[in-house]
Image (tube, rainbow, N blue to C red):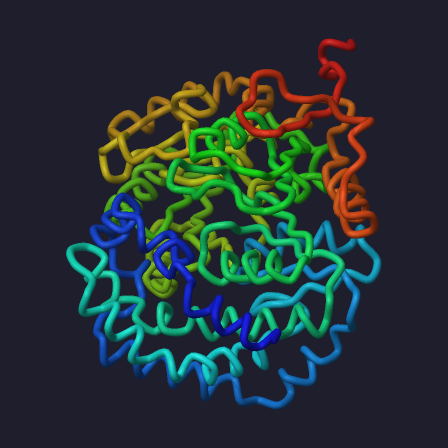
Amino acid sequence: MFYIDVLKKALQLDLWDLHYLYSKPKTLERLLLADSSGLPRRGLLLRIGVYFGHLLSCLNPRHWLSQSRVPAGVIVLFAKTNNQRESLKPIQSGLPGAYLVGSHGDYSLDWTFLLAHLFSLPFFPYTWVLFFRSTGIVRRAFHYIFDQYWLIPGFYIAVRWWFHRRKPRALVLSNDHIWECRVMILAARDEGVPTVYLQHASITDEFPPLSMDVALLHGQDALSVYEKAGPAQTQVFLLGMPRFDAFAGYRNPRSGVGGVGVCCNLFDPMERVAQLCQTIRAAEPKCRLVLRPHPQDRRKSDWLEIAQQCQAEFSDSSQENAFDFLQKVDVLFSGNSNIHLEAALMDVYPIYFDYACDARLEKYSFLESGLCEYLSDLDAVPGRLKELAAHRPPVRHRARRYCATADTEYEGRSAELACHLIEELARQGQINLDDWQRVSGSALEAYELPGQTAEEQA
C-alpha cells in the first residue's frame, strides 16, 4: 500500500509549483532576458541527453556507500549549493549527530538521484505530453529544463522511499524555491518528518509562500516579504543570521578607504563591471582592490583577466567566505546582491552600483530601507571615494531590520538559538514558546525574542 500511495502522489504532483522559479512568468522572464551564463543550455534533445548524462554520473558506487552511512533516526540537513552548505554548517556544529547531505554535503545523495532517474524513465511520455500542451513562456522553459521536469516524479518517489526507510527526526534546508528542496519538503511532509527552513540569503518577492513546519528567518524584512507571498501554516521565528555569529564581534576598525571590493552577479554586464574596476584603480592607484564574481558564474577566466588588467585581487566566492572577503575592504560596490547586508553587518560601507542603469531591478529593498546608497554614474565614483576616505560613517545599525539580533544581547547566538529550536521540534514534535513573544500585527504565526537593543540598554 505504501508504494501504491507514493506512485499515486507522484502522478498528481504539480510540476509547475515544484519548479517554482521557472514556472512563474515574472521570474522566468528575468532569467530568459538575462545573460545566458545563468541558464542551463537550451534544446530539447540536449536536455534529454543531459538527463542520461546525469544518470551515468550517479553510477559511482563510492557515493552510494557514502549515503548508506547516514543512519536512521538522525536530523538531516540538505545542501544543494556551497552557499547553502555555509549557512547550514553552524547548525551542524551545534547539533551532535546531525548529517549534512546533498551535492555540497558531507554525504552524497547520488544513490537517491540514480533511483530518481530510473524511477522517472516511465514518466517520459507524461512529460512530453505536458510540453506539447504548454504554451507561451512556460513552453520556452521546457527548452531549458525539460530534464528537470522529467526528473521530479522519480525524485519524489526516491526521496519518499529514503525518508520511509531512514525515518529522520527532522529535515533542515536553507532554500525553499529550487525544485530539489521543494520536492524534499513535500516528501518529508508526506512521511510525517518535521521540516525546518533556515533562511540563507535575503528574501525577494519572487519567493513562494512558506510551506515548512518551522521557518527560522533573519529578521523583520524577511517576515514582511513572506507575509505578502501568501498565507502559510508555518511557525516563524526571527533569530538573526547564524553564519554571521563567528564575525559578530568584528567591526571594521579602520578609518578611511584602504580597500575597495567589487562584486557582481550572473546578470551584471561584464563590460560595466570592468569599467568600474578601471575607474576605481585610476582614482585610487594605491588602494587594495578586490574583485569577487558570483560563485555560479562560469566566466571565471574572463574575470581573472579583468582582475589582472586592473591590478586587483581575485576573491573566489566558491572558496572564500563572504565575511572573510569583507574583512579586506572598507567600501563595497555591488549590484543586486545580498552581500550589501553582509557588508553593513561588518561596518563596510555598501554602495549599490547600478551596472544595468535600471534601479527597478533592485529586489532586496536595500535602497528603499536606506541600507546602502545608490550610484550608476562612473564619473561620480572617484569623488564619492574621496568623500568616504575623509569620513566613512558607521552603517551596522542599518542592518537591524534584516538581522534581528544585530546590536542586541543575542548577537552572535543565532546558531545556538536555531539549534535549540530544531532539537525541540525533532524531540517532541513542537516548540516551547515560553521564551518567545508573538510579533504584533503579523499575518503569519511569527515570534521574536524579547529584550532591548544593546544601545538602548546602554
